[in-house]
Length: 439
Image 1 (cartoon, one colour):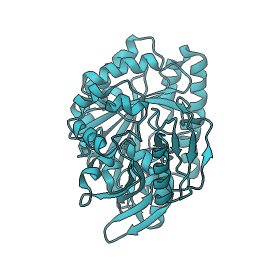
Image 2 (image 1 turned 45 degrees about the vertical axis):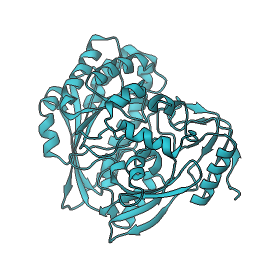
Image 3 (image 1 turned 90 degrees about the horizontal axis):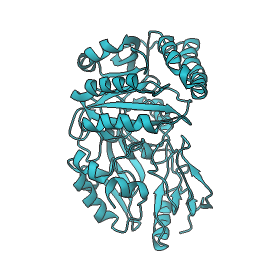
Image 4 (image 1 turned 90 degrees about the vertical axis):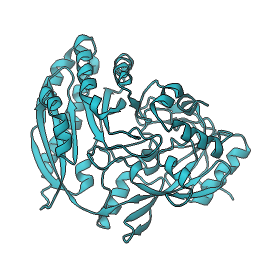
């Protein structure tokens, strides 16, 4: 089979611009059959194969010097099954397109992250998550998938069919094969009421357990160099819908969160000494607000200021201690941190390489404006997180290797054994997977 959409590739770069690769060629298959043919051809030539989404990972998880599979033609809703409460989508479908299509059908995911530019396969393969007391990551909402393996075979997987592959491939790092479609559990569209409110750091940390327990979705942002946080509580509502007004939404989400913040970050990059003062002003700029809307319009928000990020998943009970240590680190160091630290939660799940595998989890995410030195801050923060048994987000910056990760994940060996069976020649390997999986 001739695979259409094949091109010589120059340089592939991720969204943040911190990763680049020079694949031999790229292909944009429009079907499972075309994708399988491309994998078979590359394997016969001895070329490694990686699938790229929209490049929102900060790690080189999708980087390759072989064949790069691009997602733009493998998109769209393939099946809506209202009776089963599922929707099947092509793997290259952007989350924003899936959310809009689900809404048009009167359906929704139960939970989602706050960015929806990623493809469904890229987001789930690296463990993208939102925040939730009871509902977990995107990967945990998968009920079926289709996977092209290293020999070009096509596996359909669910809890009833190829169950061992299904268990692991919901969050597979691209190490087990190339996803071609995913089936998600969905439900009738509902309303969420969001309550955003400034709150002192000491109060948030003192009341953290209660805030998590009392709200379906709780998260907060702490502004380094200050004692200030901004909290967000999302809970299901009977309505009526009361969306943000166009003007207030633009002021909060575009002007303050993107426009003014972009300028503040640029000033801080040029004049680091100004960052603490800017942080104090920024932390007071966002006011309390309450609004009610359909889920994806509440869970997600635009993120136009580019950054690099490290995020660690720690046991829920360690969250406050880790965050307090991070605050003490910033206060005693010379670090100048212009981005807030984001804190979210998730219930434990049963996915071998999920950052929430087997334990209730809190996520602590550190960001730095793109182009500013981040290594010293991230290194020091990583020491704090690993001392609490932290697991790094697979798509965000970290220095952990297979030896550390094997101890951090009780089912790590289960995943690597499955990889040995499905891809013994490492057709889907790259330098990142060699580091985090061992070979």
